[in-house]
Length: 304
Image (cartoon, rainbow, N blue to C red):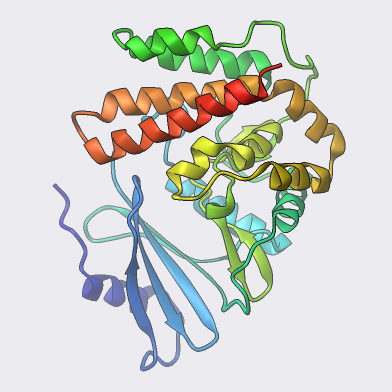
C-alpha cells in the first residue's frame, strides 16, 4: 500500500514545483476527498492553487477511467482559451502517485449561474483546436446504449439489472445524426466549475474524451451526477434556462431527442458501481445507489 502523504509532504513538494517568491503567507488545507483522488488548496495573496493526488488503479473503469495525464493535457490547452485554470505542475510524488496542480486568481464571487455554465460548455464544444491524447468515448444513441448493455452484462446476478433493462430505450431511436467527435468533459455539473477572478473555468478533466457534446448537456441535467457531487438536482426552471442559453441550439435539440440513451447509460453505470463496490467501499456503493434512484426517476419523468 502506498504511504499516505502528510500536509508537510505536500507543502515540500509544492515548494519544489511552484514558482512562489514568498511562502510566509501561504496557507495549505486539505479538501474533501473524492473517489479517485485527494485534494488540497493552497492560498497566497491574490491567487489560489488546487492540488490533486490521484489514487492508483482507477484506470480500469467501463465508462469513466481516471486518466491523470489526459487532465494535464486538457488544462494546458484549454487555459489558453480561457476555459480552464492554468496548469501549474504535473509530476509523480515519492509515493508513486500522479499529482496535478492548477492555479487561478482569487474570485470576487463564487456564484455560478446556469446561463454562465451553458455558455462555458458551449464554447468548449466549439473549440477548433484538438486536445492531444484523449480517449474515444461512446457517442450517439446506439453506441451509448451498447455501453450501457455492456456494463449490465458485467453484473449478471443483479436483480436490479433486470428491472433497469425494462427501462432501456429501444434501438433505432435518437436523431441518427452523424456528428464529428469533439472534446467532451463527461462529468460536467456545477461541482466541476471553478469560480476564478477571470470568470468560470471548468475543472476535473480526468474522464474527458472525444465524443458528442450532447453528453455534457446530459451530465449537467443529470440528477444522478449532481447527487454524486453532493448537489441538489436542478429544478425545471433551471433546466429550461440552461437549454435556452446553450449556444448551439441544434445540439440542444438533439439532446432532447437522444437523452433517454445517455441517462439510461448513466443509470446502468451507477448500478454497476453500486453492485461492484458493495463489499469494497460500502459508503461509495450507497452513494451510487442514491444516484441510481435519482437517475431512474428522471428517466421516468422524461419518458415520452
